[in-house]
Amino acid sequence: MHFGTKAVHAGVEPDPSTGAIMTPIFQTSTYVQAAPGDHKGYEYARTQNPTRSALEKALATLENGSHATCFGSGLAAADALMKLLKPGDEVLATNDMYGGTYRLFTQVFAPMGIRFRFIDMQQAESIAEHLGPQTRMVWIETPTNPLLRIIDIRTVAAETRSHDLYVVVDNTFASPYLQNPLDLGADIVLHSITKYIGGHSDVVMGCVVVKDAAIDARLKFLQNACGAVPGPQDCFLVLRGLKTLHLRMRAHCENGARVARFLQGHPAVAKVHWPGFANHAGHVVARNQMRDFGGMLSFTLKDDRMEAALQVMRSTRLFALAESLGGVESLISHPASMTHASIPKAEREASGLSDTLIRLSVGVEDAEDLVADLAQALEALS
Ligand SMILES: *Cc1c(COP(=O)(O)O)cnc(C)c1O
Image (cartoon, rainbow, N blue to C red; front, side):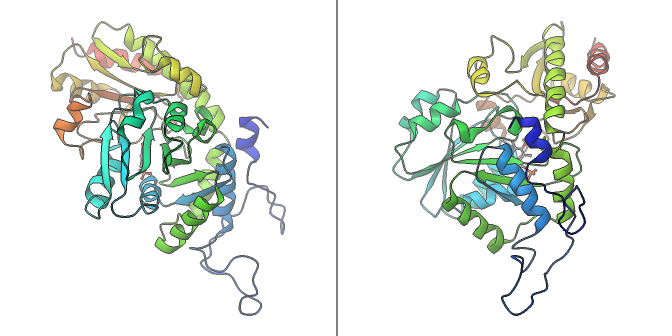
């Protein structure tokens, strides 16, 4: 079955008691048993909820995995993955990553004895040189946030296969429409559903998708034991959002390309980070592992004063100044002071994230209006 058909149908069956085509919102905390232990597979809603189960089935299908587990946020999903490890274990992570994940690693799990090393993974062939005897997890984000660097998932997975470790891919920026890491050899896929999968800026949620029943069993144990479960209303909203994921992603990609090319040709712009450009360092890998290039991009101005970047961010009318990404509406943001403020300035700059970088999440409005909005904001500079 092709992606769009799966997006509309995966995981959902007409409700057996009424025929409702949409999975009902099972807003219940418990389920009545006929006799102690005699139940219909549902005992308590932290452990099982039918709305959540439908969503988990759909997500597993869209990522070509066998099982998915949903959590109350993307970071709650990352938190569960860290609990697959024990003190003394090491995580080798990409150095250009979501600020909240970096904070979770360095300020929550490092003090508990898990070790983290952050490296540039663009040279995927040499990843094995960085592995130590305690490395139990390799953490990839691709495209990276906010510099849109590309990491070759297939090569990282192949080069680390003989080691006893999990290859995790945070696939939030790509969405399952653009990239399926399990097919490329990864063990675990994480999404902040809050972004493209939810797609309408109205839900905070995360998930983990795997293809191995043993990892799934441990994650389901952690989901129930630690309790960071999403509510049924939110699961319903995401089930609804999923049905248009392929349509939204096509529009994000088309608009992303239009905006990237417009910025690239603008005299006030210094550099545009977008993997669709043939001269982007990760372009060939992106073409091989992604179906298209996505709606995220970032850029710097020729005027390298921070005030110039801030002025552009104050001047857009359609692009709203806000954190987050992946919703139908276009957003503009300043990673250094917003999403990435929890990464120390020295480390930000070492990984190439300057204080003047502007990030765009290109929405699904008409491209002409988006380009005109950026044109007037850049005009205001001169
Ligand atoms: C937003 C985001 C997260 C965290 O997800 P939440 O749902 O906000 O907890 C993790 N990784 C990436 C790449 C993100 O953009």
